[in-house]
Length: 373
Image: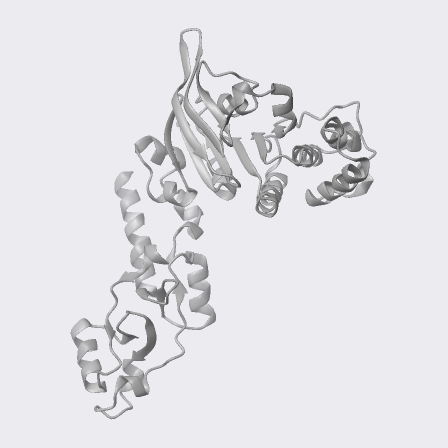
């Protein structure tokens, strides 16, 4: 874990960081973001002691980094910057092997790991004997990422590593970084000024302004529940429309859908439908677990005294509450259905999604944003 504890940073009379405290869990990709001059790069450089706080402490797994040897600390933390930081007089192979050699790792292990890392960032062995100037900007940045991971450290620091790249290359590297982090379970601190990039890669986003921490949360929660007007304006009021996967089933479902027990009969079911102006009923047990479904069209063919338990549809397609909007729509389209129940891990009924509930949820969000403008 990385722990910032009451960090303050001043340059003469100007305060850059104000009483900053934050706990970053192991294995998470955390993005520091905010306007220029908000202190995000300053905080990043404090982790490997390239910058010292005026006051406060930073702990790595419970150890105060101010008491650690800075050289050893840096050798065990990967670091990627915007212009890659590759040594121009060294081959790609030499750049990748430098830190592992300094750490005294065996050559057989180093050479094997070097090839594996190149492949992981989408490059082949033919690049090993080339020099940085012989590679494109995107290829150099891939090598920079690979070198950061070559330290075999648990922590990787990345300071706007993709900002100078073209959009296609940048998008590809964002995807590769995300996959590498999930595969290798590193703790990555990533600085950017691009909210789209933050949303795409982050487990959590730390949004800063003038040295103050405004909000630290998942991309989903920041988009849905910005803590103040500045955060809302910074992320963009309409950004959720560009990220429909942020909307989950629980955000668009009808809560407390009309339901019925198995012991009711057809006549009673029809009356319940009429009373509630619906054409389907969820069938649940005493624990509210979803066990079936009846529709007006389906039960009208049966005797009015027939028991729901005997005639209900038992193979009911359902989704979990954290299913995203895109997947919900795909499920409904693939199965040609106009509604789908939402359940939790215990199969308890939480809600119901219909095409009209989706339109209603989206329309209400649009109206809220129009009013805000």
